Length: 269
Length: 355
Image 1 (spheres, rainbow over the protein chains, first blue to last red):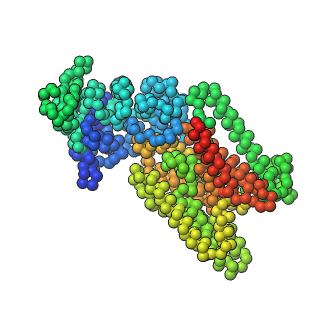
Image 2 (cartoon, chains in turn blue, red):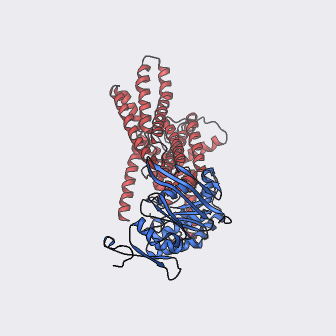
Image 3 (cartoon, rainbow over the protein chains, first blue to last red):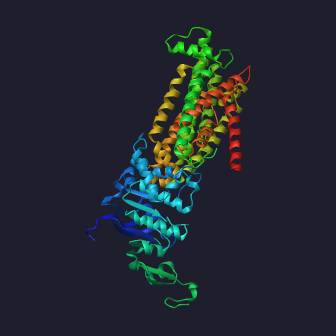
């Protein structure tokens, strides 16, 4: 482990509202070039952890370092040159075209008065091509489908040229084809990626590392087959399931059982 | 009016060229044409002669030349500055608060300014009757804009103090405290007017509806300086302002200090508005309407200079209407902009429902 440079390291993170700890003593490390999936039930603290990582929230306790440097040392602009974030907060009445939205990724790299150069335009076009949206560049962003919107936001992040890409539930509200497409697109970028995700099978199939959160605490971190055990899923999510290796990639594949109250673990209904 | 998604590059170039030439011709012709309207009949050719002669270094001497150069031209320039300033202030505020109804007067500026003006009129105007005529005219020309400016600044400072620095609640608090402060100053103004004479009420009403009649070359300095300076600063932050469209949290991840940028822009727009209100009175709807018009023309762009230019040209022509609609007196600017503005919004609502 020591030879691989750590892209991201968070030690003993806590974030409290009054007395209530939304995050309690969470530590996580991620080597460069890997993809970390943050999983856990609703309210486990996934979004809060991400918000601490991209400095929207300042943790009550703990340290976060990015490539060995404390994140609090970065200026707002230099941080944005290192870390791009894909969120679901695009407001209503958003009147930009897809290309204009993608070009927002240039913001941290451009000084005052500097115009958008041919090089910048080329980068925007290349990012659009990477996510397969070239044909929709001049379409209004609001007219895109859910999956296309998500890809446009990822293209914006690509233009930002980050070393670390953070995504908060990018597969929400997408059908399964787009869920797989988005995650495989992220894998193909060969960046260091932190992603919060609800679907455990998807996380298992496409993440290198998983961090399982429950009520603000880190329950487990490691490779999917280390984290996703029947016992843990039963404890954290309060459902019954059977975990078996996936026929294609060998990572855990989870089958859920229904009518939980009547079924004890290990029995089939 | 809606954007057709598949515009080809040549079509867009053609449209851009058309826009630029159109604006060029309009900007050049508007002041000359506008100067040929008014109570005294001076035709377009005479205006051109006078302007060329003055630009050639000649001092205006004839009556015609003096009407054009000393009465109409400063008025046209002031109208342009006011329209430009209000339009960009509206565009910036609508963008950084992501509120399509944001307008330079939303943050209590106009009611603060009215209050300041009423204080000057009732307190100093009343005392002025005791002193000699000279000091009354001095008070009338200097103190009313001064009072309006102080009142407007007071209102803005109170909004800034109330809105706080928490990003998640900032916009809401800004808008709500603006409304509250508007009501508060409105009540104080009514109270003062209730206890003052009808003359004060009439002059406050006339002032608050806006007019460029008092424009002079010497009075243009401050508005020009403030609007030009603010425009340069806004252009410096243009990328950041555009990025605010994507939402506060996303703007934060693009490296923007969201709260500080928003407060700075509010302060800057308030400065523009306060100076303009003090010089020309309250001219509504321009800051609200012009940015929407330009957005319809150029969707998705943050075309600041175009917005300012459209606002300035629009204001010059509104002033021409104000001078010419009635033969025996001038109409207040604010009435005309309000009529045009409300009709414009009804039109937009209608076309949106159909679309």
